[in-house]
Amino acid sequence: MGWVEDDYRSVLAYDIGGERFREVPQPDYKDKGFRMRLAEFRHQLCLCCWYKERIDFWVMKEYNVRGSWVKLFDLKHTTPYIGKHLPLHYTRNGSILLFMGNDLGLYDPKTKSKICLKIGGDKKVINVTTFIESLVRLNVKG
Image 1 (cartoon, rainbow, N blue to C red):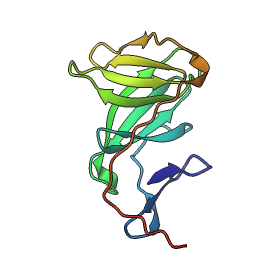
Image 2 (image 1 turned 60 degrees about the vertical axis):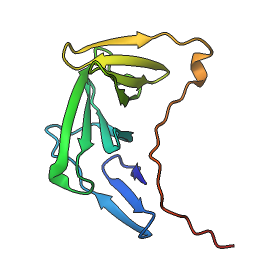
Image 3 (image 1 turned 120 degrees about the vertical axis):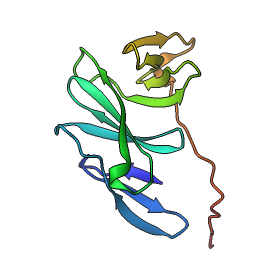
């Protein structure tokens, strides 16, 4: 279980099995001055870094190993600080399904093109999340 600390500079994790907190090593960023958010992508820890003109998407190939961070892609944009973009799924043709604020979209890393998927209903209430099943048993005392 992981989260970004309030100052947006630390990634923290809680090991449920070992009942320990720790700081997760981060990638070697080229640039500073961004906000970040964690996600799960293809059963790996994913770090989304929002800059003024782009979003970088990183995955940690080997958990808790600093050198295992790989930059998946970056998504350039013309509107400063666009809404949250989180990768959800690789499609069979290599596109990436993205949660984009209140929309879903497809991003093609080869052509660097993005399309918004039209979904019916109230756009103000859309929310998307992913999960990983776990066999760790939680001991509840009470």
